[in-house]
Length: 310
Image (cartoon, rainbow, N blue to C red; front, side, top):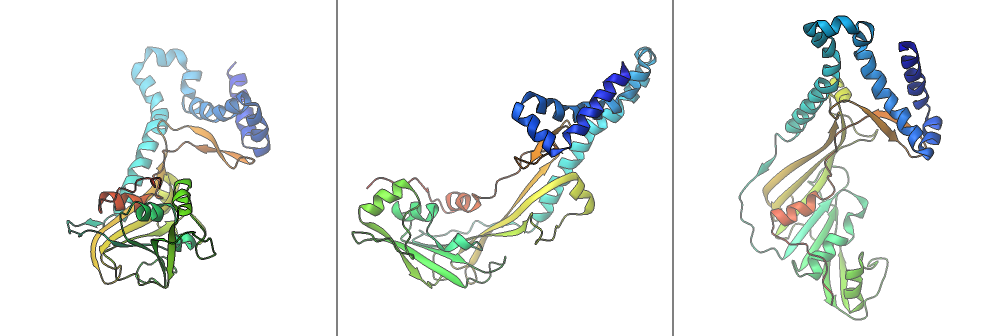
């Protein structure tokens, strides 16, 4: 009986590591669940092998039974605990230079939002909400080359001006949301000013990556940490009263997006949709995309409400 049990699990687990087999089984649903679950069941069955071999002896000797349980308990709960601990310790190390000063910033009328990405110069959803809701008079979208926020070689200022009808041009591609589109069609145009001065502002919020999980970035983790948890991204967001280079630093915040091993340790289906793989289950990673908006709300008191109808 034991040979059939382990033989079946070994065959199912082996089949699950063929992406084609796993994909075809996932189309049917239940077979894929069996293939994925076989990896977890096989792992703990091997760790609990003494209970299969000497069930009577372990039943009458509780201390020996507890010792036989230790390997499974260590793998199920000990390894994920160490994984989470190392993930938290790594994040704390990355945040060691963070600060948050109680520096008062007067009423914000001009604001620079800076980032390194290609779309940083356009007036997207956040920019439109700030302008159409009159939170600020002017938003300067700035972009630097590389991953250092000390230089802002490109900057475009955006403002709302009544100039019906609003024309859509390569420089002004039009609103990004339906609510902003109604304001745009009502004659409230969002107009750009190329090569704007990104330093002559009331406040600057900058967000830039310190690490991305792509081959072009050097992994800052140790070899042990690479085995214990997955690092997705490290982003930093800063706030300055005035310009990024000449203003007064108010805040620096580091967001580490990492996922540790889930507890108890188990396996799930991951990878691409058409090329699935068996991977350990992990905790949910932090989302870094809304870090700038969090600063605008929390530190500057800007509501960022949806664009109101005209």
